[in-house]
Figure 1 (cartoon, helix red, strand yellow):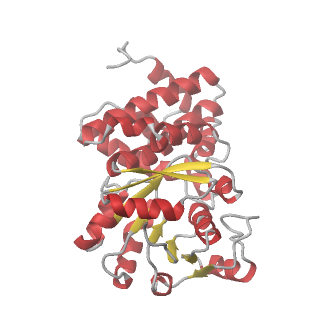
Figure 2 (cartoon, rainbow, N blue to C red; figure 1 turned 30 degrees about the horizontal axis):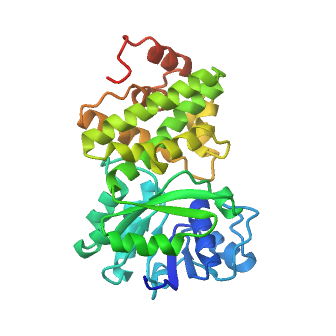
Length: 338
């Protein structure tokens, strides 16, 4: 039987990082939660609530917030990393001096680095010592922070190269309301988790334009086809995309009212400008940045991804949403499985 885990730290106190910290603490694991924002640290330690990113959710007293990476990681047995993708590299550089080597690290960030089009574990391999690379894992799947925090049933997958390590943390994370499946396809799990955010923007546009459920279902289905095409071209297992981190997360994020990315898409479809939407948001909609990286990967691997192409044109080339939809619908006839 695997040894129990007594102390962990969560890096990143957004909604998802806070929900995971709450979950770990409720299992009796001493949990340190690192936040970049000092007002978040103060709010959590003073009132046991992250009133900025997860308002209304009471946190256990064994969730201790800190703005010090050294304090967060001291004596911990594993790290859950939930920092937005655009800040991942810089936080890793600050984190590295405080890591005991090797340290198991679970990436809960769903994104692709915009400048390099690298997945999060690839960024981690750039910034962390080689001895830690095999200890990298990814947590992904259909999981709204608010629902996990409310104790509603949630199922995700945990992927990694080291089977024994994955099983150890699978056991540490699982509860009667949080089911964790083991996986080994780091590439596919990350691609599914990142690209679904871009497809959620497109699904939101469909809903913002009030084009109906037929159109939304078609968007989700063809979006999945694009994700699979790119995943296979990059060496992922196509079966991964029919699992929790693929179609599961895609459906949730494209239809759920709690989805930030879908909400941004709805507002775009209603005619709001991207700059106005983003400037008014407290939290990050990962799909906005990931869209550019996804297009870079599509071009690099010579994969046709028309939805990705059109959402980029809407976001960054001032293309109107109705024109993007009509251009998708009026493309040359294709075989569905082509």
